[in-house]
Every structure is written in C-alpha cells, then in structure tokens.
Amino acid sequence: MEHQLFVYNSLSRKKEQFIPLHSPAVGMYVCGPTVYGDPHLGHARSAITFDLVFRYLQALDYKVRYVRNITDVGHLENDADEGEDKIAKKARVEEIEPMEVVQYYINRYHQFTNLLGVLPPSIEPQASGHIIEQISLIEKILKAGFAYESNGSVYFDVQKYNQQHAYGKLSGRVLDDLLSFTRELDGQSEKHSSFDFALWKKATPEHLMRWPSPWSDGYPGWHLECSAMSAKYLGEEFDIHGGGMDLLFPHHECEIAQTVASSGKDAVRYWIHNNMITINGQKMGKSLGNYITLEELFSGNHKALEKAYSPMTVRFFILQAHYRSTLDFSNEALQASEKGLQRLFAAVKALPTLKTSGEKSDYVAELRQKCYAAMNDDLNSPILIAHLFDGVRYINAVKDGHETIHAEDLELMKEIFSTFVDKVLGLKDETAAAGDSGLIEGLVNMILEMRMDAKARKDFAASDKIRNELTNLGIEVKDRKDGFDWSRK
RNA sequence: GGUCGGUUGGCCGAGUGGCUAGGCAGCGGUCUGCAAAACCGUUUACGGCGGUUCGAAUCCGCCAUCGACCUCCA
Image 1: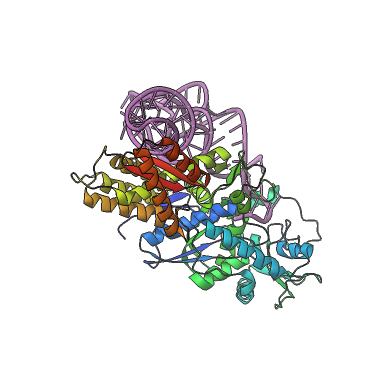
Image 2 (image 1 turned 120 degrees about the horizontal axis):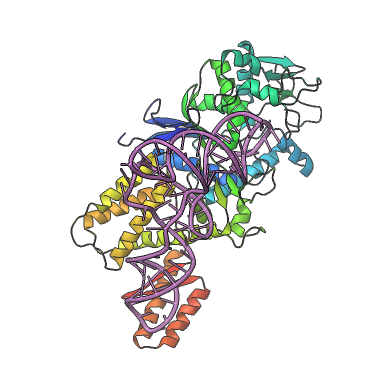
C-alpha cells in the first residue's frame, strides 16, 4: 500500500500503524444497535464513524469485509444479569411478537442510516440467527473450565479466568479493585461473583424468546453474540473491532475474555472506539432521557431543536469532529455545519465549470497529499475538511478570476474532491438529487435567461419579481457578472 | 472511591515545543441596479499556579473544574 495508515488502538492506547493480517483483505467487526428503540444521534455517530473507516480503507484499495451485528436477543434491561430482556419487554408492553419489535427497529435503523449516507455493511448478522454458534462457544468455554452451570444458566467465571489471563486489560481495570468496590451479592444469586456474566440464561416461563440448549430452554447472554459471530464471519483472528466507547467496559472486555477462554488467543488486532455525543456537556443517552432521535432531528420536531436538520448536515456535523472526541450538540453548531456544507457543495458544483489557463502549480498536488496525510493520522476527518475548505477557497478564486488553474491541476482537483468529499466522507449534495431535476433545471434556466433579458432592459421590477417568486419556490438565485447561479434550498 | 479523558478565541472544533487549522457568527472593504454569493482584510485563543527550556498553549508537577466508565447505553 502506498499510504501508511495509523489508527489509535484502545488496547495499547497508542496510535499504531495499521497492517492487516491478510492484506489486501481487511476484516472489521462493529457493534451495531440493540433494536428496541428508534435510532438517535448517538447511533448515527457510531454508524458514521465506522462508515468512514470502511470507506477510507476501500479508498486505499483494501478489500474490506465489514460485519455489523444486530442485537435482537439477550440484552437485559437491568443490572447484574437479573432484568428483563429489552426486546421482550417492548413486545410485552406493545403486545406484539418480539420479532415484530426487532423487524420494526431494524427497518427504522436502515432507513435513517441510509439517509445519512451510511453504506450497508458486508454482512449484518442477527444474534437470534446464531444461537447454535453461541451454544457451541459456551460449550468450548465450559470445556476449557472458565464457566459454570448454575440452575440451568451458565456464567463466565471471571476470577478463574483472571488467574491465567488479564481480565480488564482493555478498559484498564484491575479485578481486585472492581471487586472491592462493588456491592455484595445477596446470596440468592446464581452467580459465584458479581462480575461473572451470563453466557446462557434459563428462560422464565413467561419469557417469549427461548431456544433449547444442553442446560435449559433459554437464551444467550449479550456479550456472547459478538464473539460467536465475529469468529464465524471473520475468523479466530481479525483486524478491527469497533463500537462506542461506552461498550468498552464491560461488553468488549467480556468479549475478549470469552474469546481467549475458548480459543486461547486474542481475536482482535485493533480496537477502535468512537466517543459520545453530548448535550449541554452531558452524554446523550437513553437512560438519561436526553437523546434526540434521527427522525426528530430530520423533522425538527423536538423541543431542543430550533429547526430541522438534513441528514447530510448531521453527517457533516459529526465528521467535523474527530471520532475520539466528545461532540457537543447545539443548534448553533448544527447551523454552522449547514452553512459550511453549502459552501463546500457550491465549490463542488463550480468545479466542472472552471476555465483553465496559466502554469502548473504545486498547490493542488500538495493539497492531495495533505488530505491523505490527515486521514492517515487516525482518520482525522476535521483536518481533512479544513484542507478541503482550502481547496474551496482556491476554486472560488479561480471562479472569480483572481487565480488561474492549469488543465492538469483542474483534473487533479476534481479527483481530490471526488475521492474525499464523495467517496471518503460520503457527502452527497441533497439539493441536487431529484428524479425530475432535468426538467426543473431546464425550466429554471429558461426563466432565469428571461430574467437576464429583463435586467438588460433595466426592467428591475420584472427581474426582482422573478427572483422573489423563485425564492418562494425554494430556489435561491445568485447573480454573477456574466450570468447567474442558482440552487435549491 | 477507582480508572480514563477533557478544559482552546462570540460559538463549534483541530493541532502543536518556535512557522499562530478550519467552519459559523461579527466588523470593514471589493463586486453588484438591489439582494445573495464569492473574494480581500480584520478581531490572535489555548483553566490556574509553579517547573524544565534560548523559547510552552504544546513537556513535567500541583490545584481547580467538567465529563465518561465502574448497571443498560452508540
């Protein structure tokens, strides 16, 4: 590979050069949503972060198998492996089948991530479709002696595991410290220790989602699906595992323990975690009740929203921050992104119309290098965007005749914008996309030509009337020295 | 209490031992019948206190403060 990509590995807490196990093939597993609620801004950040990784790896000519799971079973409502399954609860409350809940929210998730320009993963496995794999993994862990059965349920024996391996190495935790601070078990629990976690849970009689197993009719523990499905589709060892930072502990820590316990080795080479979205400095989350769903965001129908924000505005807003930083939500920030994105696309639209002349310059080639350098440095999309805005300034200067661009440089500039704006950042011009745009374009151009004639006659009453009418129809007109530009709002 | 991470100009948000991202907003100007856009210029920030250094916002220490995780959360 021509470029040296460095990514921050949560395990080593350092930026490391990314070297795939089997280049040019890359295996990436990302924790997807638990489908019991509408997707919100936090889901968008995770989806977009790993979409960026997916896209950039492909731009570097890697062949990526991107697996993103759907959690549709086993994710419990409360702590200590004692609560109700989230999806089962939703189904009970709404008096529908659990799988109806699952399907509904999968559809919603796909609908909204699609609007956000998130590419579908290569494989999107569901936990409920991989019960056999999960049971077989439990058997391996039992056989290796790192789990025990208790009243029809199976638990992972964290303390035993910790005697031979380092439990907590991903999140920087020390088991003894954890144990000394945690509350005592009440003696009723099936677990030997509070940090043991469920691999298999025996279903209560009223529990709807249940499968037969050697231990009981029941269902798998939440952490298990990722270990089982990543191994199935990416092998015992693979390159990247991603997810939100809030999954680092205990979810990913447990995954590591399960994998090491069953196979004796670590599966994941690079752990990548995206940071949270905050609102008024506080994490946006379901449990805090301060989250904004994507539907609300796109419609503006939420008390915290001054207006609706388009999917691309949201995507751009998220990409303007580095994925490992918290990103604070505010109307002001979203509106700044909205304006900035318009400026970016105005330049993209101007690009094919630029007149070429003058000498070749190093500027464009250097710009291209800077863009790659930004992405190679732990996928620094905000720096990439800053460089692209440099390019925007240059494009505008050429457009206004203050600067010249050689034909070869123009081609290179087009390539840069196509690669980075379209392919890597995945930004699409929403205003341009319409099925009948050909007809509309023709009509608007015709009307604006007539307005030009009116202007030439100094009939400003007519020309202003045309402009006002078009503005009312959502078409913004911008006069130029030698003609006009227009765009749909 | 433990672990980790922030604290940057009006707002968002990068980065860095010396060359002072970027976006948005503001101000002044160019252009324009007007408007918008664009362009040019402009406002020069890094929580506090010490230390290291020729030089620190960037490294170290202490303090303050905010947050994340330690229960489910992207």
